[in-house]
Length: 383
Ligand code: HEC
Ligand code: HEC
Image (cartoon, rainbow, N blue to C red; front, side, top):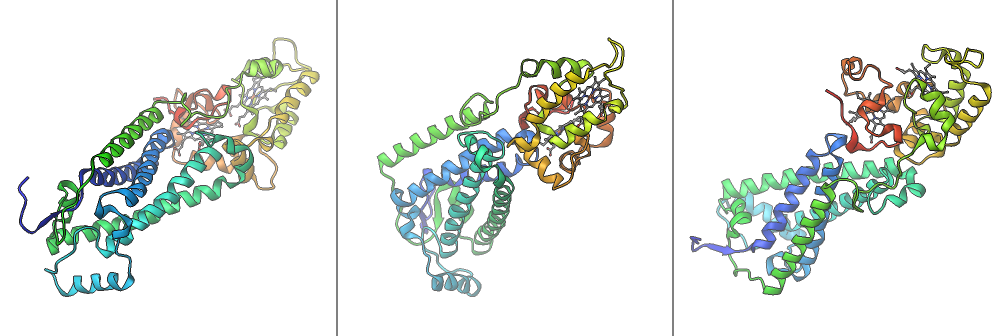
């Protein structure tokens, strides 16, 4: 490495790796939040982000000198002086390590990032019923919206800080010419101070941490049968749970899971069987036609009402109930605002396509829906 006279070795390779892993995992988490069915990847990079923050915090106590919290320059007077000098003297000399602005930024990333990671983990457990915190869904489902807002707004706020940080770095690079961009690549910065050193055991610590993180990453991207992403919900076998519902109503369509509609909706559907979405169903019809005896109807609707949305803490149930407010349930979930909102981006012609045919044909886009599963990673619009 050709080293110039005026340069100092400030960022050992481990500090740089952590810096870039934090930056890339944050960026990727944003990208993977665009589509619901990328949730697994979003969570995997989110876990890396969180682990790197933990590591950065440890590094702040035991790491090489310029990474330590004790070397951060947090006095407000110094921060002000930094900006004043920046404006007044283009060729001012800067110290090795963090300047006052980047010292504050470090704290912002660590605290903001912690909020994002913790709310993300809680949300994954409480809203999705997944991961190590999935068990929290039952008791804390009412907080899913609040957590969601905390999670995304803290991410947006940190994004604004990231943009400010990048602007500052580019200014240092191209206006003040302190080589700040490449300092995080090569480790060398144009500054005054001593070279940084890392001991062997610290390098070892980093290797162990990086290997653990890589393992966690691969395990969590790998699918659904590991504790990082496993769901708390079991697949239903409706044939087994209510044979009458499965066979009688199953004559025309796969079983809709009872938890997608409230009791009041199931009552309306029962009351309206004579005009069931254009089909006539009644106890007086001949065998072989759409006949369901009154007795079977009671069995079926008792079963459906017992497991309806108002008795469930799954995301879809909670959100259907919330979206209804105090209003009576509709006959079709596709008429409920929550459903309309979640499917607003899908063009109408998709629902009329040969493979989908109807909005209520949930089963073709949501794999395993007939087993009571509504996993984000299972969403796929047939082409
Ligand atoms: C004779 C055929 C037939 C039978 C039997 C039948 N259904 Fe349906 N069902 C339909 C049709 C057709 C639709 C309309 C699908 C659509 O909207 O495109 C429908 C839609 C539904 C929906 C609406 C889903 C939604 O939210 O939009 C529910 C719920 C439902 N049926 C429940 C039942 C239940 C419960 C039974 C048994 C008591 C039953 N169905 C029996 C034909 C039938
Ligand atoms: C044409 C395919 C298609 C059909 C049919 C369809 N969906 Fe969806 N659904 C999607 C897509 C795509 C998304 C994800 C939208 C997004 O990424 O914002 C989604 C999202 C959802 C969500 C939100 C998932 C979450 O975790 O936020 C629920 C709940 C849902 N669908 C239920 C249903 C039900 C119930 C039906 C049937 C009445 C249905 N969907 C019919 C494609 C479909």
